Amino acid sequence: MTDMNRFLRGDPVPLFQCKSTSNPNFHFNTIAGRYVILCFFGSATAENTIKALSFFYQQIRPKFNDSDLCFFGVSVDPQDLELNRVQEIIPGIRFFWDFDLRVSNQYGALETQGDNILYHPFTLILDPSLRVIANISLNDADVHNRTIANIINTLPSVDDYAQVPLTAPILIVPRIFEPEFCRQLINLYNQNGGSESGFMQEKDGKTIGIINNNFKRRQDYEIESEEIRSYMRECLGRRLLPEIKKAFQFEATRIERYIVACYDSESGGFFRPHRDNTTKGTAHRLFAVTINLNAEEYEGGDLCFPEFGRKTYRAPTGGAVVFSCSVLHEATPVTKGTRYATLPFLYNEEAAKIREENLKFLTSQQINVNQE
Image 1 (cartoon, one colour):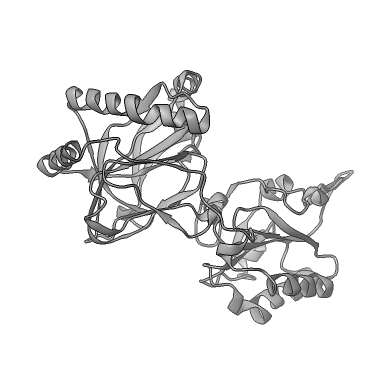
Image 2: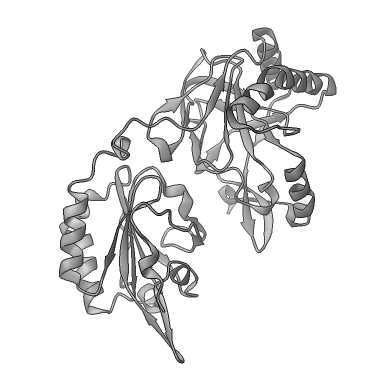
């Protein structure tokens, strides 16, 4: 039987990766931070689907601006792609190609009757944290369209979607590094320079590095001095880890990564919304730490957590922002000056076992999409 009705108001939806009209491996989790219409229509040839798509394309098209609301349709019919039956329109309208039925099955749109598989089309309206506002059957397109119009016309602003002020679940702790040590780390970067910084992604079951200037622009210097590393550990152990234990009841015993990161305004340094533990090679990461080294010397370059509104956060020089690696976050573009920070990940002994187990999935392969 179909499991479509399992999505009730307030339920979180499954996250997935799928080929889309604009991306061969779209990560659905990255679209949090706006309202989402997710329509499992199956095939663009069905009568109800034709009416629904006409409604989306024409009657409420201006609503889809990507910053407040976006639309994703899910097709399982290869001819929708081959015959160009549906079209992406930016901003706001995109489609997933679910030809192996994996996502539709995950969302309960399929029903098996003997040797036949039936598709039950429906639409979900999701809030900016990707939780269900409404689940609407597409068995009657007129009712479907009226219901959606009534809901989206009464939605509060994105920043007020919870109808109370939201604050991201983070910890800000000042005075982790002394100003003199912050300047020492900046000088270390300037003396040695940095290399282009990528991010991790799953490809063919392996965790690989990706360089993509459309998603991330940052230069990193890896700190080699054991003396400096040792002092960083001492500062974290004395001043930050006790606060993390108090706030999150988490005892960090391991640190990953000793770097000085540089976001500069010339390139508009940024890192688009992402999570830090979504691959096998990064699954052990539990908490991320951002320690600013020169918070007064740049504009832009703040942290934002889209699932909790558009408010931005910045720790003072030498201070830390700590947050779960599972929380969607971004570094907004630096618009003036240069931002320096150090960005360790924290984990514990249990997570260390996961890291050791997953080393077999980690590869030194790196793909630079800017050169493709």
